[in-house]
Length: 153
Image (cartoon, rainbow, N blue to C red; front, top):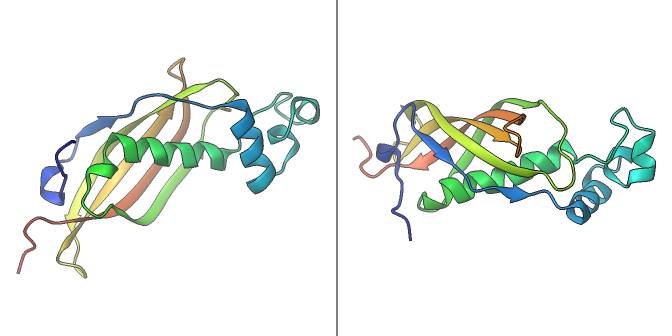
């Protein structure tokens, strides 16, 4: 198992990379049907009449998969898990299609000790999700609270 990561183990500019994960057609349609039932997420025939003209993943499905990739790349090493504090930016840059292989690049862009929770630190992370062609499909900037190894007094 990988070493645990506390606030003190991070630094600005640090980058984590995930392994790829495939966007399977059946899961894409299932997610769309349950959470974002628009034509472009339901089946090929309905998608033909959409602005995409083809079946594509819901942006929320892409965001959910990106979260899993973040967890696998680094957050699962944070004792007790990270606590989301804020999403500052979320942008879908390119449609995700069935069969696309997505991977995430997570960069620590800022850090500060929490003023209200001395046992936590706040990390700002820029997550860039790319497909198999290195095309950016999603970008997110978010802040998360992580435990500190030695809180200041």
